Length: 213
Image 1 (cartoon, rainbow, N blue to C red):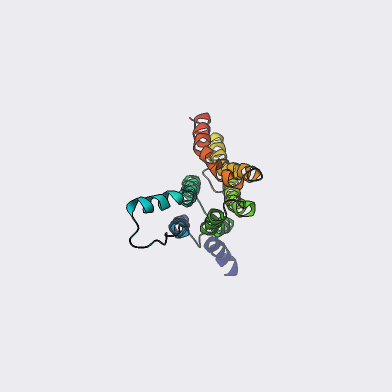
Image 2: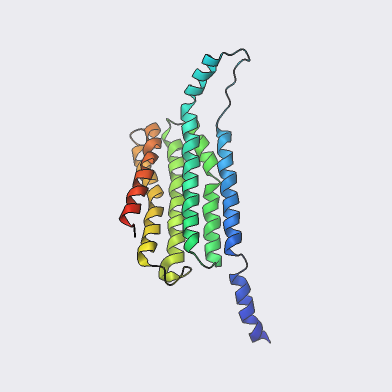
């Protein structure tokens, strides 16, 4: 009787959370984190009799805040896309993959804070480096996530071609690479280092062409 229940217990340990439930949970956390980013933009406190030209001038003066908001929003969207691309090829779950996702979400939820910090102290190196490190850690965790799932076809289809595994790997490498370069650039100019992320799209396009079927 004991021996016959052991396989069932092991099965329950593997399927205690399904792939679809984890994906839905991750989507929800990303949605909340992306929504919270807008709270980092401080509404200007102006008298009610402020003219349109004065308000427009103030809004233009907030361009750096809007840039930080848009940058963090789009990078989180890019991470979410990486997650969906990886999970489109992952066929089964295990406990280790679950905890890797939880660890990634720990740092995803930190992005609204690191974005606000780097926006408020954009000329202070430690503030912008904190933002860069936040993105670097998320990116490295996604690489570890894919490495764990794809190594030896552990959690992916055994027929998944090696070139597809490499393509997903290199796509996931883009943001952490740019974040690392931004950290180096912050030693020269903390504020300017925030603009390093504009190279993400050209890099992604180049990698897509290299690994095009």
